[in-house]
Amino acid sequence: MSDVVRMHAVGGPAVLVLEQETVGAPGAGEVKIRHDAIGVNFLDTMFRSGTFGVALPFVNGVEGAGEVIEVGADVGGFQPGDRVAYFFAPGAYAQERIMETAPLVTLPQDVPTQLAAGLLTKGVTAWLAVRKLHQVKAGDVVLVQGATGGVGSLVARWAKKLGATVIAVGSAAKLERLPEDIGHRLSSENPDLASEIRALAPDGVDVVYDFVGRATADATLKAVREGGSIFTIGAASGPAGFDERLVASRQIRVEHASAASAVKGATLEAAADEIFAHWRDGTFGEIQLDRYPLKDAAAAHQAIADRTVGPNPVLIP
Image (cartoon, rainbow, N blue to C red):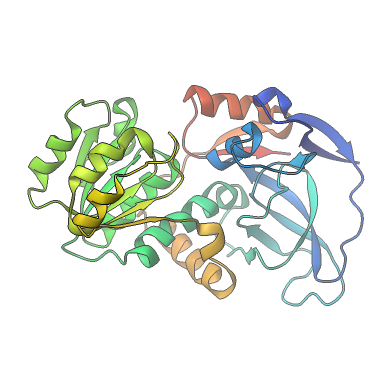
């Protein structure tokens, strides 16, 4: 029998219930994986709460890493014993699972599985931001709203590595997570945040990566230059709801982005290669994992709600 955390209703963390199940054999084009670790993302809390509708019963979680233990017919490129990780494949909160091979990447020998489980989804989202939505380059002025979060901190560090001037906005209590040389570190609690940003970038910023949404919408819109770009990713405080007439009159590009639909196949492999390369060279700093037993998935979700956990929680079966 294999442990699995399943939800039969939407609601608070208590709906995440530990159960046991028998995991069968993989079908054609599928593999069976034994997890070493499962990533926990803010997205998971939105599935759990019903913000994003799911068919019940539902196994939460979209990323994990571990070992292939069985392969089905017509599977190429993977065999038992391979160390793998995957990005955006719902059903991760389980000791073992069966899944299609499309979301899988083979892990390099030097990348620990637990680290991959905590980094891949956040890293892919950061890659989408700085390499595809807007290809950050030297001379760009980049504003990151939510820079102390899991994805935002990677975006801020990656943009700095690419030569941009970075204005990183985040929780005052967590700004120390970002290196002093990141550029500019500003508290999101500042009531005059927009003016503070404009003082640093009088002509406005070239691009905003907003991981917060409604709570930072006003400062975001005031900070971006004429003809600049705003990318909302995640919107932890709810949809931004920018004034469409003002956006149009200032020729600002606004786009809500999702890595799940944009990063697949060969693109995913290329993104993973870059992510692991920047982990190796120290661009992302030290990736600290907060580990919870799989049975304590509810506690991990509660810690996210209470903001008492770091940016990279993982579940250990």
